[in-house]
Amino acid sequence: MLRYIIRRILISIPILGIGSFLAYLLVSAAGNPIGEYRATPGVTEEDVQNLMIELGLDRPIWARYWDWLTGFLTGDWGESLALGSAKADVYEEVMRAFSVTFRLVIGAEILAIVLGVAIGVLAAVRQYTIFDYVATTAAFVMFSMPLFCVAIVLKMYGIRFNDLLVSMGGERWIRTIPPAQGFQGSFFEQVSQYVGVYLLPTLSLMLISFAAYSRFQRASMLETLGSDYVRTARAKGLRPSRVIFRHAFRNALIPVTTMVSLNFSAVLGGAIMTEMVFGWRGMGSLLVDAVGQKDPPMLMGWLMVTAVLTVAFNLVADIVYGFLDPRIRLG
Amino acid sequence: MADTVTKTTPDEPDTTPRAGHEFDTEARKQWKIVLRRFLRHRMAMISLSVLVLIVLAAIVMPWFLPYDHTYTGGGRYEDPGPDHPLGTDNLGRDMLAMLVRGTQFSLLIAVVVAAMATVIGVTLGAVAGLLGGWVDTLFMRLVDLWLIIPQLALVALAASAFGSSWYLVAIALGLFSWMSVARINRGLTLSLANQEFVEAARAMGASNTRIVVKHILPNLTGVITVNATLAVATAVLAEAALSFIGLGVNIPDTSLGLIINNNYAQLELRPWLFWAPFLVIVLISLTVNFIGDGIRDAFDPKQTKVRA
Image 1 (cartoon, rainbow over the protein chains, first blue to last red):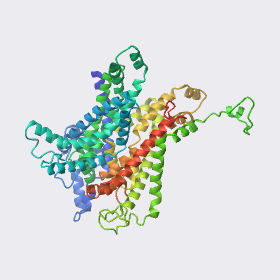
Image 2 (image 1 turned 30 degrees about the vertical axis):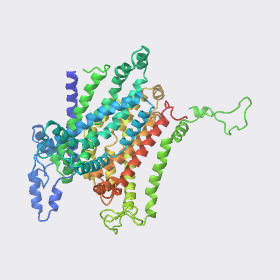
Image 3 (image 1 turned 90 degrees about the horizontal axis):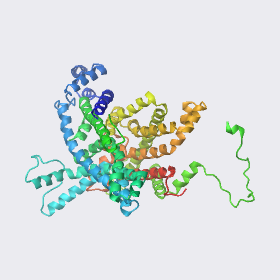
Image 4 (image 1 turned 30 degrees about the horizontal axis):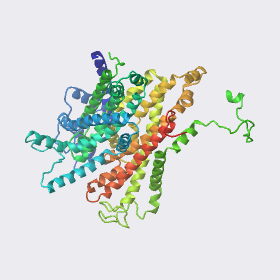
């Protein structure tokens, strides 16, 4: 097992390496702040040249990439080149934004996996019942929804709910950002504040993954339920619950694991939209700002963090396989 | 070979009933069975009609509307009325005209993206699956490489490098949408390539090109069609998301995502400005997904939902 993990990590290094170079090319092609600087009134061509030399933009791209790479590997991710910001440190900015997004993504994904798997299994066990039809249709419709629209609508109802609370003499419960002074008060008050902040964004982000997982889980559960070993288990006279959980369910989880791990970057994409709607300052707004301001170091930091995470998630999925499927021997 | 030696069908169809036959049966061609199954798929047919209506409306309506997208003579945020059925937006543009134009662009982008994803994905997948060896490894590592960064971020970067016209955004989306198609087609090609009929073709001296075109691709038709259809739905949503966060299509072109971006702040006061483009996006992606499901069922020899 340990050997397998080490081998997998060693394989991902060249992929990350080539990926980072391609990302660097793409980011360079997307532009740099020089164009904007040149267009600023009162800036002479000499100023532009000086700035380019200062930022190292006069050197060939592979030399710049090499500088960036050695800096990145030694923990120096560079400074933001956006003209407006005060040369923010890329590492700090990306990590701050990531911690915001991570809390959103983790909660939404755990909910989506648990609910999606549970409802998918139930729909498969009760195939062609009312429950199955409702669940399947709901998942199909959710699957076809633009996530940001779901978030926009949820936000509107959140505001209405707040207004309702206020009109009943209560306080606003749904918030878009954590309170400035942090979560305070007794345990229950803190939990309530926490739920008020995270409820709607988590819900919007969850719904899309949930639709995909429950559809997929239903299909794979139906396949295992129809397989020979399940029929054998039933024929042996095992209790139905044991057949469903020990024989069918465990094997039906294997394809869903792939789906969840491959879905990670789609979930990050969803988080970007959710954050934009709810005005969170996470990875989403960081990306949109960095692309808008043409800020290469920030973009590279952003891309590398997500790339490393995606690779890590794929690795975790492969390890989980080994536990779920006894036919797979890692080593 | 066979077609030069024997002729299996007579030139003139024999219409006189033969003695001893109460009725004649005719072998149905594969595509006829598939078509019949699809035509009897109720949800798919309803969806197809709705989608055709939307597409026709997007194409035809500009000729019948009193205003087009360049008109800015309306008041700021006029309520819906006989003059402007969906009201006007913050620049006094007629919302219905904008919606029709946005639908046109969103559909165009989706079709271009789906076509690109299908062509790139099928080609890479089939070549990797058939040739195997280092080509397979190389192509699949390429897929891994393309998948390590969220699609939304890559497309946003590419679109910012290319430009914000609709076709540049479409190309940017298409360049990063083919990966799952390639994976699926590689797997299927791999299993097809090991079957007897491919071995037989190879033994008779067929070239790789001939094997792919004559033997592999016809067997992939169902999967390719289903995935191309579903790619349209995904592309509509992806484009809307990209334009919504402001990194996709931009003026002078427009799209449904951009219209929502411009108007969603009015949800509470003027809900129609949000719900109209939202409804069009959902209708397009929902109907396309239903059609894809219908095609999948029609191609599936095991399915029993609709009689052939």
